[in-house]
Image 1 (cartoon, rainbow, N blue to C red):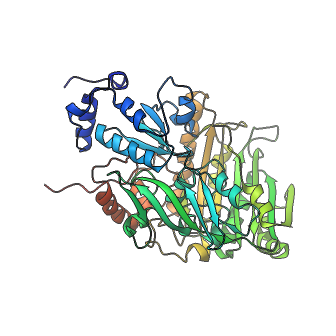
Image 2: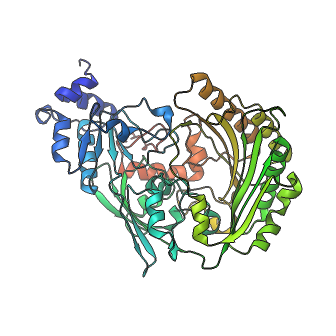
Length: 507
């Protein structure tokens, strides 16, 4: 069969591309008699929303991912869906013509999994949020962002524990687990999921909960997006916001020695910390001044305590004992919602990044922390917009998180201590050696950390360099996820380089 160019598909709608790609996917190809005219014109006529193609106004903005590493991945079109019926239309069209469909809300996939050379199905207009205070629930559209949820609850008696970046989609956050500054005392976002609606590869619009399609509902609580379908609605059980003041703290230090002391002491604090403490610790390489690279490290720990300031002061006192008096101290009681406003971060200017994360089940030896900090002092780029940082996210352990078993949901990372994450960032227009150097630095940090941590990594921080991602993201839950995938998407319509594969047919 003669090769058919992407341009021909766009302009003439040749059915040959659908036949070729569908055959490679194991999909049923469209009949040549049904492919007359432009397939994209057919899709456009059926949509209630808009269909944008390269060259159309708004196309570049509609497809641009948050991670600049994948800016050059351009789809044949982007469908701006008006409702869930548009999503069904796009999935049916994609299946018929053998075109890869990829859902998009916030576009924040760390590994660029919200990009494709196929069809982008943008659900950003499905962003409605409604709160039922009587029943303590929230209904969230599949395209809603953290900002939509925050705005719907701020100042009120109920809330949903979500992430900190307001521009991130609640759907993607939930499907991969969902961590943030309230996880340690209120569990994951996906632990609050009561039900969901999903468009499957067959174009069916299914309602999921613990009694209906319970296997797929299980997979939607930690199995990550991009494998099973497109979730168009979520219903969550909300948590009660504290009525009494809570305590916010932030301590800042400077220097490599302080970084080692703070990160190690923070690790020890987490070993026995009550669920009421929700905090992080971080060290970042900054531009080198006269004192030299070891002093050009900024360090901080911050968080909230669901309780009075005196109790929090005693909990975090080991940080000062390990690193000395901070250069800046903030420890104050305020309303719960005032603290959440501090944590909520607006959409940053888009840049490139390549984080890798590792869960830990126990404190990492201080000598290992010192080795990671030494690598931070040798970070190959340390400007304001191109640098490396080292994080300990102390949200993921404790009694609340561990009240759910490892196999009760697809999110398997229970009974852990913290989540370590080296974070490299650089401008999208930086020379290639800048990004390459920071990625190599990240791998070196992980090599130091790997022997002291289990082979588990957060699936919502995916990285294409993780070779054994099946084990690291899903561990013992992976075989069941394969079974769910095989049942609902046997021909692998929804896929990316790290999506759940269907079981191969025995012949």
